[in-house]
Length: 466
Image (cartoon, rainbow, N blue to C red; front, side):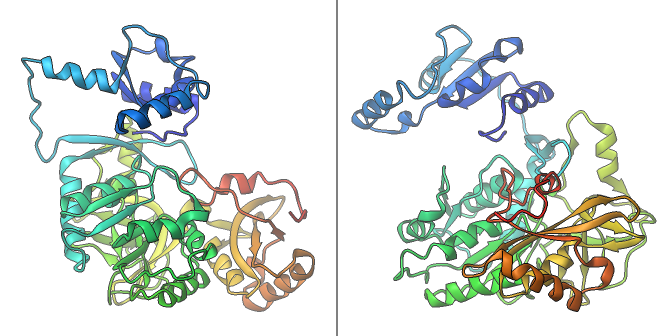
């Protein structure tokens, strides 16, 4: 599965690296594959049209509206419509079914890391089954007949497992949202009345920032879970205040996971929650915090690399033995542990606190600096809505932190920058203080809605204020 908004080169590389034989694609995306599709050894390209799901009159109107909007594919044996492809299946007389066991590979998803080349993650059947059982144990209020709002797309582990497979496996419905519109987020809630909502922090920020429906009743919500990125404390408080004002007994909690472990590894829920934590391991999952250099387990409350042992781990990266062996390592206990490259710590009660990617760790003058710690301090200032910190090369310190800040309404960059610098000096060690604080109207995002740290590193506009 690949992102429908991927570039031509990304789609091509996906097809080549997975040795795909069939491509099922939204018909309006033909221009993305036109230049290279006949170079590949594909047996068939199958186009799906939204019109296929409409009645005859709406379909006619849709088809007419699309005539001039996108380039149509040529008519030859390589291409087929989904309708014709499905119709021809009725005449297949002899079909040999492949036997699938619990350990057989069933899907390839792409890792959505904040840096580096995405990899093809091979996941087996048992991982999906195991994940659904584990989430059923933890989300005790979720029952058959409930619904989950699937805002996150299903081309990665989080959307495919947590928002698609698990709800359906537990007898719930999943509400698909093809295009997310932040200005109509509250209207979407009023129309669909989901029981469970999972998404990245930016989605929940959109909800509380566009309170068009003043009488919006959210009493139907049982679970509101944030994942995929750090949830700042001030945003957590504002979301909980919004939920309470709109008749919901739910409080936003956090979860942690990655595609290599089928998305959901830990989760805070119901009364099993500590503010700022990403919860406790789901049933059957095991977590250690280690020193990545020695593999020695860190004491409670000390930051180290998060490693995971679970039956829901990936089989490996497709055709990449070196990267697979680096990620999946056998420890002295005989178990295979996934080395995540993520930083965090665990407290005495077993709650995990995520601190960001190890690649984001900044080493300045020999000191380890964690961007998430600086972000947390700056975001505690009443003028700040959002902050992201990246490491910038320095001639003799190696790297220095630089902060990009989005302000709350009513505050202006020219007047607040000096105040923020003083705030940093008061609340953090000297070596942690950002070399610059740059005000932006918004921060760049990746396709998954996470902060795009690479673009921030490339931001050369200096001290300019948007």
